[in-house]
Image 1 (tube, helix red, strand yellow):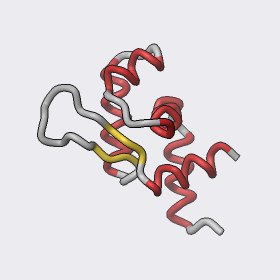
Image 2: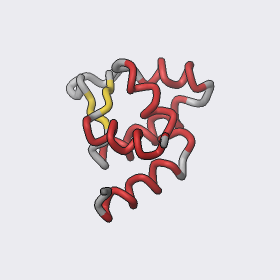
Image 3: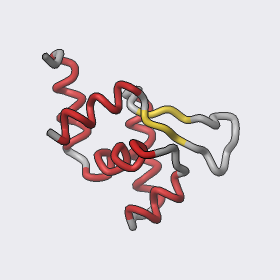
Image 4: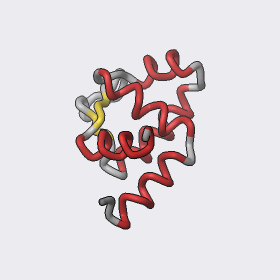
Length: 88
């Protein structure tokens, strides 16, 4: 059974096509923001905004936090769980 906090997270992620699609993209393997931008056919600024919010919520993590350009992100276990609930 989902906790109350989970439902807020699910609603927040599901309310944005970009947040949801980014989690789906990261399910397969880690990716860079520019790669996600190309795959989603959307501006890099949209991807960056969604990445920041997903990272704040601990649904994704940056594997290369010390570099400025070419960061790589991956989905967390919590992100996988939230995505499963959205996809069902």
